[in-house]
Image (cartoon, rainbow, N blue to C red; front, side, top):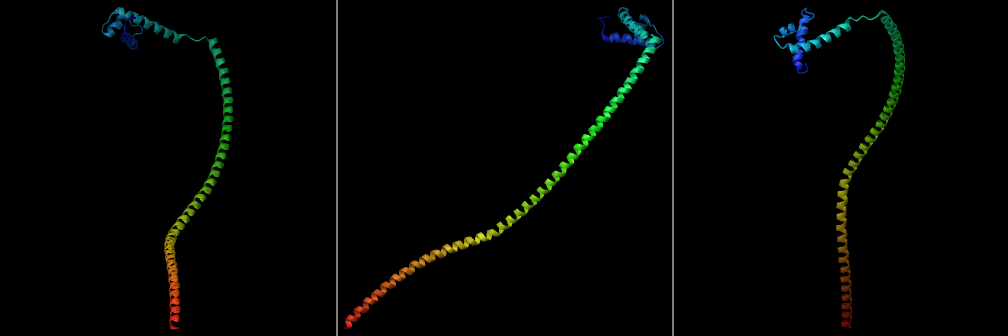
Length: 203
């Protein structure tokens, strides 16, 4: 039998099962061979021995009655086990309910804390929004001042340039005035000299 393939063993067992299903509770090796359409009895025989042994074991398991005393004992034990299971289930249910209540209470506390945190964050966010709005207003004011300062800077630059030009002209005028005064003094000295010379000549 050990040399047979699994497929061959399965085909022999299927043939025997088909004969049993067809109303033949104890098919012979020859009947199995005929059902297969041929084959070696030396191959079929060991497979059928193992097959019949399994059939007998299954039949014995199915037909062996349970003693009344054992059945009564098992019934009593099962009843006790059932009662213990019910009590255990009740205790577990109570414990589960208590744990669930505790979990719900904890969840409620965490929810309240989270809501309080959200409220606090919303207040902080409102303050931050006001700060941002104030910053934006200040930026607009700064931009407006810069826009106003630009022409003033240009005017200051023009006035500075004009002042520098006037300063330069003033320096030149002072220099010319100084030269004119020196020339005037020189002319006055010459006129005085001429006048004195003319007075001497008349005498």
